[in-house]
Image (cartoon, rainbow, N blue to C red; front, side, top):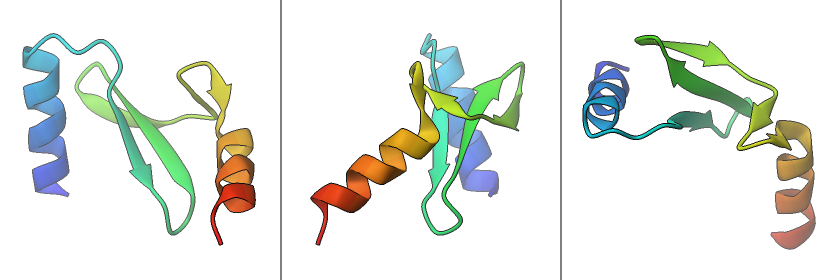
Amino acid sequence: MSRVLTKCRAYQQWGFQQIYVVDPSPRLVFRWSEHCLDEVDLMANQPVSAIWNKLDSELP
């Protein structure tokens, strides 16, 4: 987890506006905001559930 947080801080310093961390096993998505990770239901204005459903339909 410390490596993930270090990467998020680096991306923020580099000027990235949207930083997401995806945990595929429990199907959770977090957004880096104000120096912390918050679980979100939208990723880049798309419902996370729709993204998982699309992946399920595309992958064998």
